[in-house]
Length: 388
Image (cartoon, rainbow, N blue to C red; front, top):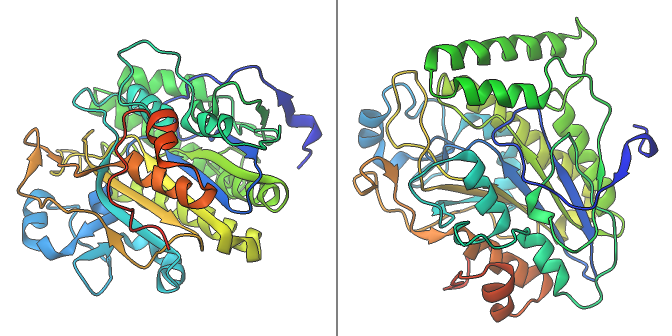
């Protein structure tokens, strides 16, 4: 890859495109610590119930999801079972370097908009109604750390990450990509067809066929959605081996309104590739690394009429890395019979609390600074079980 060709500077990072499978923003920052943090935004609202399935409620799950229930899920020997597409991460699970937290969410409720949900997730705020200047929680964290150096931040794709927006300097990087359809055009199509299952699914089919052609090499094209996730993770690992201490990028493809079985398997396959690429690329540094995989909200408990799920509330957090305690599924599970708004998984803890405890453990920030500056309004509460 020709890095100089795609290295650009930016004055400010804007809001990110919602749920776009062909856009993968990435950003980096350096700091005076030895630990590393990787934040992966899963754009489109990952279905946490399918990814980390409550096998202990198999009968109830089957009634709510007749085609999306337990089917080849990986048993953990307890209440939970992982989606089969996460099988490549089994060695990490057994080593205690991969895990999950169930029934979490940001404070965002009810409107279920990708754009607002992702902005709240990346801004780390309780809401966006007060009109305050929206900077990203990672950028705010960088601003309060003594000894912070000015390392570049990078973005893969044409859209940027709000999570690192703020007064700390950042820049952009993008791999060479020849896309069959531009991300803005695809997002426009998504906005127009989102509420119409017929046109939405037809569009998804067309894009999937185009990506399949790309994968077979028949058109000689490359895209962020076709191998770009591996290139992004490889580049991230290279930077994290040097001065960089924080990396953040996004993966699309999680908006599974229809044909969820196929779409979710593909997205989880990409995520598995990314995590394993980071592990291999970081080598011994992996032991000092925490990877948090966050999504804007969960999906409905019951499947819809197109063998998918719709926008919901509570969801799951996935995590990896030697700096965290894996081999477990955490969370205060509310059960499938206690739903939020009669349709969604009931969230029982703020997603930001787990992220806050993670950065407190990695970088030694005071709890007061995390609750007032990094994540205003959050209550960290009991120590997160993610920590070693």
